[in-house]
Image (cartoon, rainbow, N blue to C red; front, top):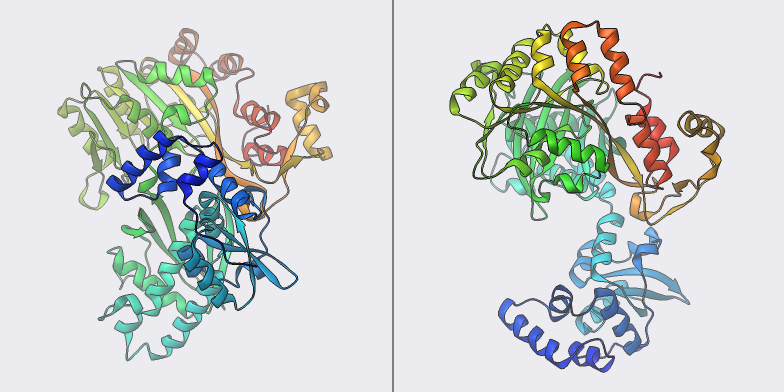
Length: 569
């Protein structure tokens, strides 16, 4: 196939009626000012879409346009072009036909890229046009570092034989630390975790191996297995960079450190724990570059969003967000803080640890080792004249009482509590020993939430319910269970063949009405549960999960999994 011709993009778009001469002039002026590529200027200025540009180039070159959103890549072909070259030339191997490799180019007029790729693959190549935004996402997904990580782990194992004599070199403590095997291995692990949107990295020593797993969308996935001897170097290196005591191997330790990967600043919280075969390490990854969600982007049902907003904008009271670890409680609280964060309000947070940095508010990290506890910091916080206080977690009676007392004395208090649902939260406060009148007078609203996986948009398709799924849905839908169309993802390269991509919250709330306040203050807990259950009828976590199933956002299987911890009524 002939080499592509050089094309003047602006003239081409004008010829095809996609651009005006005036728009081209403005875009050229902006290109000179900013140095950005002309095509990007066209798109960001709103003159023409990225897809329209790609299709125009394809028509001009008489080449196929490939929509990568619906494309299923072939890993054995893609690996013919190294990842570094794919990123450099913004190209990827799509297919092979009659011994000709079809290469998708984001810029099909780049003659240098065309010649370099033909030289690298040593095959005749054909030309296809793809969109750059889709291409870079596909490169991130398909170029897995699993083999690279396994290779680096093997290299580290071989170097461990020199551990007594060259310990510093193995751990990256000497000059040229970036070339140390353990440093390269950890960098690859972190880059792969970030690429796969992992929230946690688990490093677990077993009897004969070291297992590394990633938690993605709430589910653990095996990443690689290595020789058990690599565990020592990995754990020691992680302890060093997080400021932990490397001589202490018998007690759990917690720490944190920051790293910069792919222009993203990642805050890493690390926990080590002694196990039978060595120290297990779990790292929570918080990508500070993604920003904090607003309440409008939390996908809450309108009624719940309206009541939550009404509650947090009151001058005083307490709002609690409940759910298990990893259910997005902190994200919800910070979305609320973002809305409340104005120059007229002083906001103080008391956390362990501080998970997100938010400009304009005062954030305090508790430190139990120096007796800087939640209750001590809270007492000092009240003397700082705050309008809004965020308490990371109501961990004990003292913290809960101080928080509720603050809510009674003119402060808005936001916090979390580990309970199963919204209705059991006030009862949990009673069980902690908090006076009933405090709960009755201070608690305004309890929001309970879970995160469930959503169906991959690329591979979602109609799905016939299994018998147990139908029976589970019948509890909420009755005879209407067969009147709906249900979806499921078949699995593709976009979602790692899981059928799911990303997560969405499901919610329920309990608002302290006059009837609930009265029974909380004077009545029996069973009466409180009965009145609360009547008030929440049809607005439970389970019902919200079913709502997403009916909307085609998730599967019945996932809704059942997330709802399995809730008590059957």
